[in-house]
Image 1 (tube, helix red, strand yellow):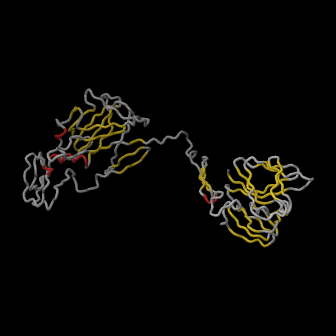
Image 2 (cartoon, rainbow, N blue to C red):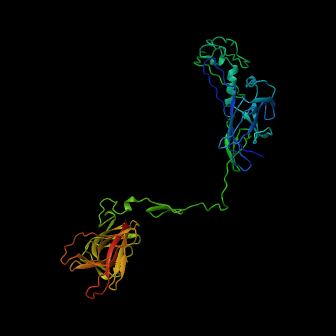
Image 3 (tube, rainbow, N blue to C red):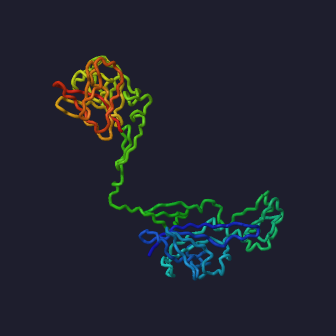
Length: 441
């Protein structure tokens, strides 16, 4: 069985006191997956870690297994496990202890083998060169005690606090295997003697690695072209259609909608009564395109609504019964409505789903108009101001204007499901046309 895993090495090195030693262990964390890319979650595993010198097939210095006898090593719910290389059960290598490794002596590689069943049938997972950070272990061997004139507690030379103007290189009593004794005569004004040892060249960038994504797997790419074992990133789709998850965004100047079904209004100023100065006569305010009509024919442009602000007692709507009373309030005319010989003023606004202009025809044969569900109807014009003006509302005749009515605002509002009819009184014929608008409840 083949497994994918991600490699993350981190070394924790700290000095609690001047005499403290660096921990002799390397933290190793990996993600175990099966051949299908599934995480091996909450599962016992066994790891064999080997430290090699000189290359991935170099000299075996140290070999250990995890867990130790009588212990267990389990992955977490995400398939991740963690071990400390150097703290396992030694099973081989030329060195008898992990802290005997001379980190300054050549390059080192970490080889990892895994048994996903927690046994001893190990499979090779990969080998990676240990770079930069783990070499901090070498600080424990004091490879370069650079002329510490005041090496306080020199048993650990790396903790020398005062190396300023040091004229003599004192020999640290226990500077084990000091491979790089600095021969400089003066450590010039070094406030803290700090030396990073263990790099075999002067290139400060050749240990940097780059991420590489290829064939659904993520790798770390070294400068020499070698790569770490890949971490598989599943991209499975439930079907073979690469485009059926795509959705389309549409904006009509007012509402942004997605083909999946959701929509949001982005034009608050077009909502009924939300604009500055909005009234029941002009629910979107009066900040549209103002016009003056001086006779002739005029057709309301597509996508526009005409709100009249001043006119004579009536206007001529040739496709809606001819003469149309401009009472009790000035008419509102939907797009493409034609008006003739109108000497009047008004303004145009964009047509919007929030405020829907409407012309209602009620004939004398008993036809009805029912206010749609979820809507409120505002009547603007169409009732005579020189005679009693009646409407049948939900079967009841109601009087809304009397003779000699002085022009002024009368707000006629009808809720959803209201039924309107022209009263059949005295055998009157012809249709009654009303202008108005619908808004949401």
